[in-house]
Image (cartoon, rainbow over all chains, first blue to last red; front, side, top):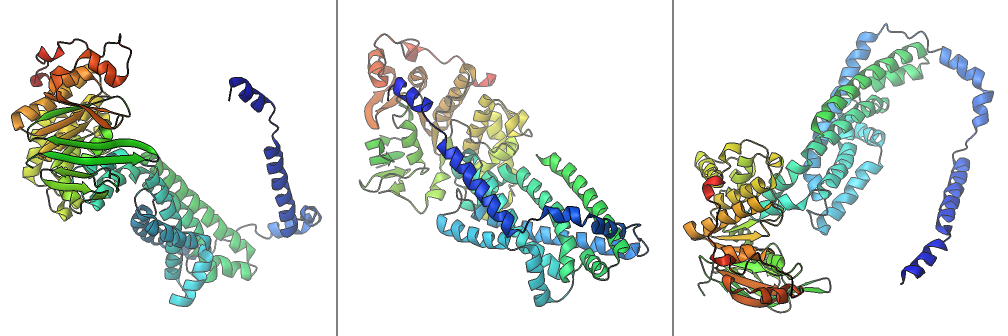
Length: 262
Length: 275
């Protein structure tokens, strides 16, 4: 094609594709509006009710603060073990889910399993494990372990897929085994990113661990759910404040730590 | 059949593009050979096949033997290729060091093919292996930087670490793929000096791909030229004439591809001690 023809082609092009894209987007949002029964008017109409409901939360009642703190510590323990077990599993799974390391007949089935782990929320896993291993924090650990493995293995694999193949080949050329290629060629390249992802998942697991208790899987969620069910809103407020403070502190500390590695 | 490297009927096709056509080549132990040719002529591809880092076409029954052992045949890598690679040192244009490891650790990786797998995987190298790695670093003039991270070194220094890794490996054959293409002229001379010294003093077989022809003429007694995936010339390095090179690279007859036609006669200026 001559430059002239290319110019005419570019100048004469109408962005029909873009109009169509916007049309599809707007149609989808309109459909979802109905599906979700969006009704902003109620916000205005029932503003008084909501105001008095909010007022019921104050002042927060901290009489039982020892119990709250104890259960909050248990919540963090659930998050710690759930994350640690997930990291241990995600290291090999992350490597085996990477298409530049594993053959397709390994990474394809493994990725589908990880998709399944991710697509089911940890609350659902928590309910299932409560049935399997009984009420208590261990069910929560198992739930977080499964769903976090699904997420971390995917993130780890994406980091592995972005590596520079040079060092891997450098290690291969020394006569190293396949495992040694991964240990010396891959892991040093992805380690900072892996640590950062793992810490980030720990942060979000502390948040998740506060709710798995609502289905009986231990931690502060148990107290939270009991208070809400008993309409003890001043105590509910105190529990929420404890959660906010602890989760924020852990977020900030973990963020500081993550910055060290990137 | 005592050749250090023996290649027969090697063909390689990348998605419709032929890279190597019926390449046959024999290199004796202790030779220092330059592989020259224009970009895309197949010299790097050929070198990668020698170390089993690439696999040839299945159809033509191509074979690569190194040190009398099969690297690949008819498009399949030998089962023992990982063991064989321990005897083949490979030096890359982009050095291919592990950036986050120290210079010494990178050099120690050369031992991986020699020590038991479990020990190599855990990184448990013994005093003897560490001494050997330090000696190799000393030989390339970098023992003082052993504790530094590889990523903090200059390009020339990184390439010398890569050579130290190959020395630690105690390979009998050293393959160097454009080892000086990313380096400044002084580092380039330095690296070529070290490679020539390994060839002369240790009697190791060295095959080096180069696109700077004057380095090939100066350092390599034998040169093999590739053109469009075929062997175009195989003979004395010093016999490469300007006219032949212009033909090889398809350059205009007025372009000078060498500093001097007499480059081969000049002794190398840079001593190892300066490294």
